[in-house]
Image (cartoon, rainbow, N blue to C red; front, side, top):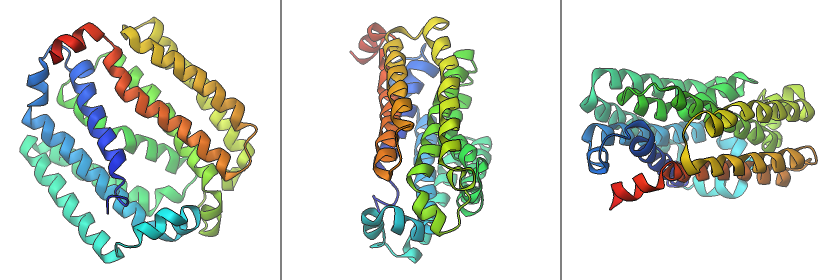
Length: 286
């Protein structure tokens, strides 16, 4: 079941929500105030449980496709029956709503909508070109939206960070489509590579990389991000390497490497938040 819900991804999201809450969204509050905020804990746990249920329903609908694209993982996931997955799915969603109800009625509405959106994406939208990619990227960053709404922090720098994250996630989703062409084609998924071809997908990825330059430039030169600027410099280098490899890629193994580059940027970005102001980090920890 840990494999089905991709527990390692959920742990990264939990860390990301807490780190961003402490060092970006509520910089004037003490570390203990944020960490021991029960409302924040409920939002983070509700997010984690909802994401877990999302992975379950996505796995439920994609079981045949995953058997082609990820045979080893799929065989492990099949140790859990489809009925058991559905039971866990409904139980987790119920728990998420209960947790959200502790915070506010607005939180209940948000997570109820989020749960429905994940189901609708897995059931219908995932099979549609472009719409599925955009929806997936939005659903990925939605838990962070819940946190910054909670803190009522609507500074411009937050939206620029979100723009950078959205573009990287969008690239990852399109790269996954290139990686999974075989299974998507077999089950008639209308993804961008299948409908428009691999070359068009590579052109779109190139455009996304170009668009990423704008938030990267703003975060380095227009906003105070401290030593986190080195993360953005490194990201530009990695995206340039990604671009060079992309146009030479024609096998699934190549796309897996490209996918892992983007995953590394996302994970490194979580921990690089600590570099925004090292002195403040040390003072708040000690």
